[in-house]
Length: 127
Image 1 (tube, rainbow, N blue to C red):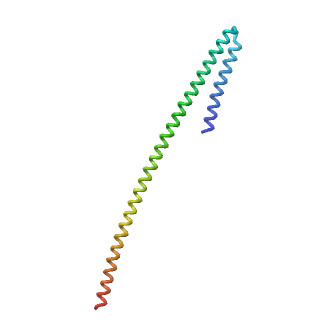
Image 2 (image 1 turned 180 degrees about the vertical axis):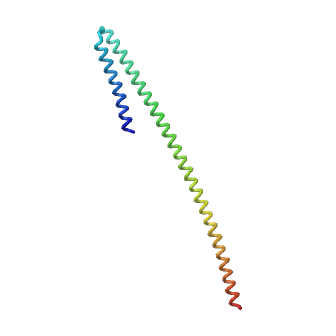
Image 3 (image 1 turned 135 degrees about the vertical axis):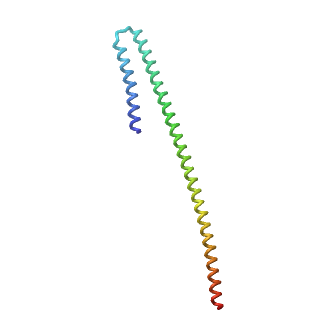
């Protein structure tokens, strides 16, 4: 993508430079007096400067748009990542609590079963 931008930039600069050179050559070879020639050269110079300034302004505006779009996309990606991280954290906390409850319930059940087994053993021993 970078190579494409560089070649586009080079093409546009070449187009502007070629246009300027062609305009100046046309003025120099046109049969006019020195005063008219200088006037035409000044006029063409102003036109070229204006075109160059317009090109620079358009490029600056487009770069600002691209940067703004990239910033928005980055902000959205960050927000999405935070939301996913929060969701994963909450899910993990929920699973941890469920596991903790399960272990506590099973521990209580095993203790009761063990107590019942001890009581049964003692009752059988007494017989």
